[in-house]
Image 1: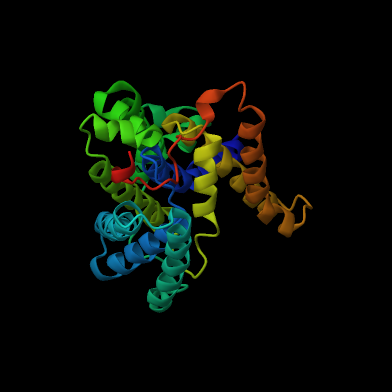
Image 2 (image 1 turned 135 degrees about the vertical axis):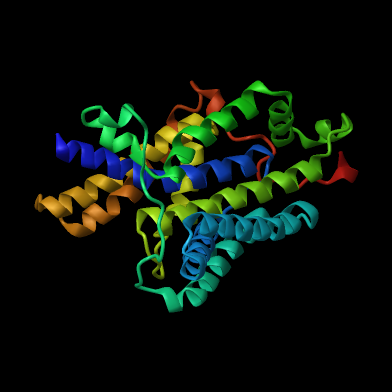
Length: 310
């Protein structure tokens, strides 16, 4: 029972990074902008958080600094893709490669050192005493609760139960019609791309201040790309992203458990499990696309909007 509780706890801790990054990517894609720079945003958020706590010894300050850096970089990405209407794919790849390189350079003084301050677990009264599930689900840090409870619920309500959410989804489907109706398409796209980037950078802070917790070159380990795949697998729904992130975290935690318990499985195969799961979860939505049309991407995703051509 203790092994199962530990497995579930590690799955939640690992999945929180993907849940946060996935929700950030969801916001950008829902308004029609494909951000392939999540991996770079994770790295920049992670190194910013590590550097901030090294100076201030406050994990919350590190998280806020990461959010600020993510928002600033997100504004640059939005300026290029939304205002200048440059290729979203090329800008995303540039953000990933540039973000990884810059983070590696800035993180050299902190490489291999433990974080000076980390997020500590917060117990949920009564629920933390439940057998097996209590220690695993209700003895986690604040970013984990935000990733799996607060943010998915807030985005679900925003996107599918408010007029503003309907506007955002309409922008992702038909920006020209929204513009004709007087909706500020460019301004809303810019704002939500920047907000999504800030949330993705917060996921990087969670990675280095709660999950690892330290900084090293390559610490993101492809999680940004998995987060992009996760949005597709989840059918662009916030609560499905949370469930999918937990499944990815479970696969990752299972690999760690197999190595710790020496189950006789090759370490290379165990390290490959999360990426095999990514491929599998990418194939499943494609196979069910006809029976589940709600999983299709927004019609205007990845397409620049030219107001003079509407």
